[in-house]
Length: 377
Image (cartoon, rainbow, N blue to C red):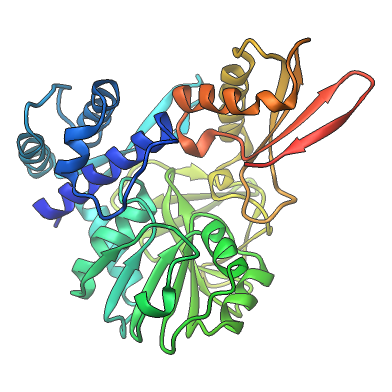
């Protein structure tokens, strides 16, 4: 069951997330308290958090004069509703949906994940608790395992030999682990790793083991689905969690969570094996777990927002399936007078209109009769 301290954590992460979106130059200290953030955040950003919190906890939007009042209101709303709402993929009409996470879903998912980590003494979370992956591993899992959780900033260059100790379970994303390895880090003895949201490459898994990870476990899923399954380094196949029901219809794989009525159709890139095992083509992001027809409006919406910037003559958005741990690429043709040096203002514009998960990670600029230029983050 969600506790008041958990709601405080979720709200704190909401403030940090919104501040980093709309004021990327602002200093955000991971250890700064929610009260401190609430006191210094500009009114427009505070209003955005008010709006997101009202949706997430299920109450009519309102403003608060004190952070503690907001905290109490959110917690009371959760106790009344018994569920949270998280942002998920765009529907076929290009609208952002909110997907409910009920207390039953929280319990079942966290309980099955907890079985994978019986020897954990402490959880180190480097993911935001206001999305499904961070919520499950950083909020619910510590309760099930009855271990403390420490939230750290996702800064690969910090002194990990001091921060980590035997019995730690470190929760992060493939992107973070790629950066972490480039910084030349090593694991102390007895530290386990969880990698979630997107599939890990074989090279990444091997490198994490080579620098001392006692075990590497992948959790695969997205905000549309929650956790679909897991695999432990060395296995080609994922094991589907038992709270999923599977159906095959005309060659398509459909899945439904126990206790829920909604069936989802999985992408053709998901290959079903024996005994509830499944395989995913390497490089397919987790947000493409659903069928391609469900994903295409997501790309179209990003294209529409990008095309509305005055610098953009034309654009298209596509998945970066050929690159490790990436999501979207934008191919952009610019109006006369604009150059790739204007990428900063384009990114600032996108941050005002899109969540961070929908902002392309790589931009390729094309102009007639000119060689294209590719720019990363």
